[in-house]
Length: 284
Length: 281
Picture 1 (cartoon, each protein chain N blue to C red):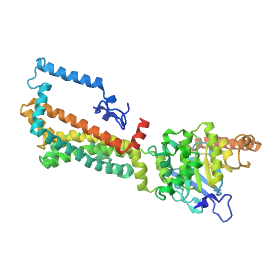
Picture 2: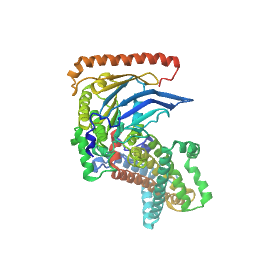
Picture 3: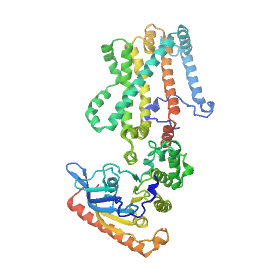
Picture 4: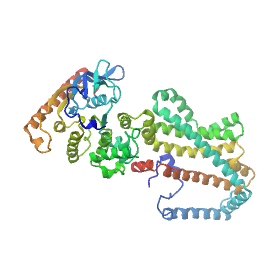
């Protein structure tokens, strides 16, 4: 059961965490279908942290829902999680949502919220230990008995992360998890997430609209752009770990990447504005 | 003061001015000015009738009503009528709530089912329930069964509709959570969707309880020769205003009692839901 803590740095034999080729997503619209993602090809190694940025409407959330098995792809797409086609939520792949208040059950205490994914498989002491373990990973073991809505936003988001961690995930899919938090809380949680990743070796797909956050956390940054969304760039982030809120952000390489990422996002925005007007697609 | 799971409709029927909260002294929550004002009204009623200011032939003074009540209590009619009406109202309400909740959950979960049944449900629901009483009398006769059917029919609507709304209103985010955690459909229904819909369902249950008493009394007035409604009309036709008003007040008190018991049961059975609802309120 402790095998989840290894798998840092992929070996040849291990399947990729995700492998996607010509991945497209269509959703039914009024008359014909509307395309949300168009022809994405990328792969994610196990233990890697991938940031995804892009203009709104470029399909960041759609991509996460596809990887989390909540949304189907077109028949000609390839989408594999740990070597298996994604049909429904893949095993040990867990999503963390931006809207923490609506993701936690207000009638359950913090502890019972963390137990939500485990209650059917574990009981008694074993369950308690797993919950304790997950809560101490996010530093909330002393708040186990409280109701989540009594906690601050940052703590609530940590409860949601603990709930995912309790299931010992191989991969966390995080959709703008810190988007609703203030800057100080946010940078604290960024470092906490990096530390958690060190400890658990989990793969992390981190969606954000914050370019600096994307670079600070990621091993690579995928830039999505256009409507429907396409991959504009994949940037390699060659910054030393452990990262540091002050020195990493002052590193010339960080600034270079920040420049490149902004440029990529902005050019895709201009491109999609022109393309969108020409094709006359709805801009929802 | 926020009432738990209160709706604007239910608020109007909130006849209890104070509700004892857990762990607090009862006396502190009794609305003394409210009760004093009520007492003044009763005394005024007495004076106005006695003084001949109101010239109704059959308007009893409160003391006459008390006499009437006393004779009914001594004769045992009052208790058997209260028991009958309470049993039908509560029994019918329980059956109706079960039916309404099950159908409401099904309709809330399945858009296809709703598409097929929506027109029929909206049509049936738009009839005032009371118009079904004469129909039920015609079909089922002057009977206990008729009364029960009418009660069930009327009080399942608010439960059904509110359950459906509640289930449908569960945030898509919460549904995503159940899926990413790998919960089965049955388990997500039991541990997430129903509790999330509970505050809405409680509103429906409470409205249903009020309706069940209304319809039980109506059915007794029109059809079933038993219970408070029947006795009310019987005393009216016997020109016994004191006794008639005693029944009249008994019906109101029964309504208050049922409501209060419902509140207590909710607080006792579902403290977590109340905590979550209080937060929003």
